[in-house]
Length: 353
Image: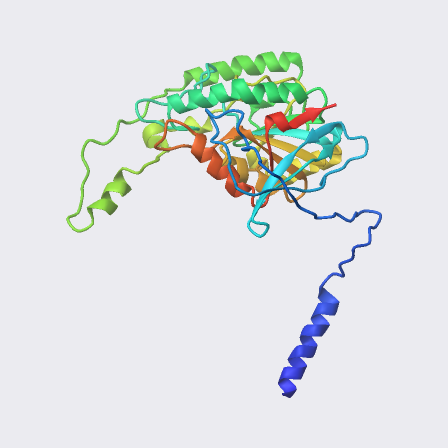
């Protein structure tokens, strides 16, 4: 009994000392949010504007919530939604942002098979969406949806940014603006010429698929996949040095001299500091691949959503889609899962005053 009383008292003390005191009273830096959900009758499917690329999201219950982001002098209006199992449905809410406090970031617009010279190696190499046909489909998605979206916002938002793999190499240093360098027009011309020469000098030829495999009698399935996996992007099929080449921003988007390139190898902290030091509080996130790079790389939402108000532009993203000719269902699944803890919007829901 004494042990029980001591334990109970210790728990009570820990609650008093450790737990923050929650209050409904606003402070200088907080406001009281009325989390009142109103059922939306006859809700429309979400992300239904581009069914070729995105299977629309259909859920039985939708609720309207009060505005979440409300900036003084807001001129960028972003309706968004998330999914809650506890609320048992989709929650939609308006948001009112200040465009000058917003960055538009495109994750991994790799310039692969787009005419710049970085090509998928033959006969069995893989990169980006892993076949030339899928890369070309992603390029068309960029041209038709992402590029017009970015261009419509560029002159009003704080930054348009693109993230790319690796570190800032000498060629891309000349080509693209980074956190601490804006190249001159002369540098850009030199960088473009050097990029073209570098990419075209590489031998985009790897080994063919194996014609024979050594399989044991008791575990042939294990042996089969060890020798012939579903995805091998290494030197065997891509040729040594393929991933060391300077990956350019896709030619399917317009790169303005003031647009900023983020390099994955520099890590998240420099990106965070750059955005915060320039007054950015909101991020509209586009890019590839919804199920991998879009969430887990340097400029992915798993990093950014710790420090910024992030809105995933669902129809301005594509997931990888193995064993399918269309990304529709893969993107739907990836965005639906992300919506558990992220806000999702779509191109037609982002409007400027």
